[in-house]
Length: 241
Image (tube, rainbow, N blue to C red):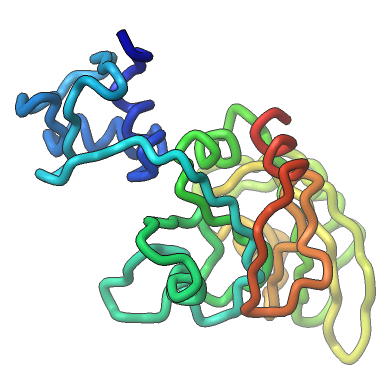
């Protein structure tokens, strides 16, 4: 008898989606096991024995996992496909990695640059993005004009955005010149456009934003629009931190 796992974990192990996304797929009736539609959570399947399909297409456990760091340029969406036919981050790497469904780990806004992870490992995605793991994310924000010490202190204590109070952030002014101020800020949540909204909450407008670090994994000198494989040390850190 082979290894038995929950259905949502099997889907994540196949690289089709993260575990949370897999749960939604099951609820929506898109998943079948041995030809039977499954809509409840917690069903277990045997790897190598049970036949699992998503939208009618068989799902197989893939042995080779890809863990990629991309320095995302502005003007790309952090999805596999875009309904408006805008360029996606997957477009940047798809010619180099064929026949493997790579998807972004979380998102960066369309106009935001910097460190974005991509993988075909749903478990890895869950570890990096799930709120309970409190993974720090560090950004360099360029804001129009200046920001007061009071504004920095508000960011450090948490601000209200969209009826949600952010957790305390690490924030420090790096530079101020030519009518712009550069601020380094570290958060561990991942709300939509959170960093931009946090600065708006203290009266500042972000004119440039770049993510430079996730946990201790740094973008370093990787050029904009280029990518590399994560080291085994980086993968182990992100999976186990």
